[in-house]
Image 1 (cartoon, rainbow, N blue to C red):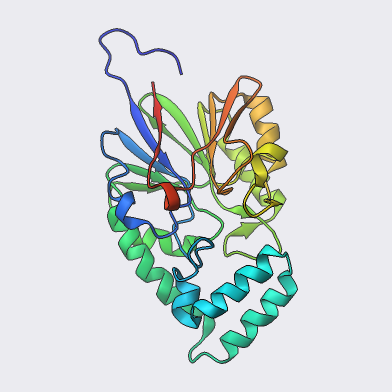
Image 2: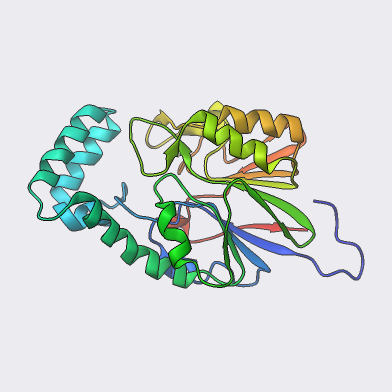
Length: 265
């Protein structure tokens, strides 16, 4: 960002992603900032670091959570889906209704923790239809849209691309690319997933490549925003790198760190 002219107060924005149920730290994430930006994944379905936390272990217990993590980590996705199907078959209640009830409980707490103003977009594990119900005045939800913060234009694109994990908000490459195109040229491009660059999409703990977006990479090269900010990959091989004149930054796994990434100008 260009230096602040003499006499003009600096603008400070805090950015978080992959909140995954961490309402306690989220309530403090905007302290000292002019605005909070959230890049999604509010829901905690299953904590891969602590298998006792999340919707899945609440419903099925830690032992079954251990098993599902083992299968997914080994990329045995078909077995994981079969295992989950058996667990759901033995549970009283309609599966979508049970999940929605649990997500609603988390959203009520998390959206209440957002400071004013907050600008947020969806992650791949979020349920977009519920967001506008829980977003209070002072929280602006954006997806394929732009907003001005402190004289800079921020563009937001939420969700993830389709994977064998089949998380709730995965969309086609074409739909994602259309949202990138709708945002156009901005100063700060905010997305949940990273651009398709090996160093930015590889998770060193899960030992796998997550899905990044080629359309996002092409837009960064073409429109040259000052910053491209994202999350999604919890333990990336590279947390930041330059693509041309654009500083690409993984803002961090907020559920684990509890600390926002700070942008000033």
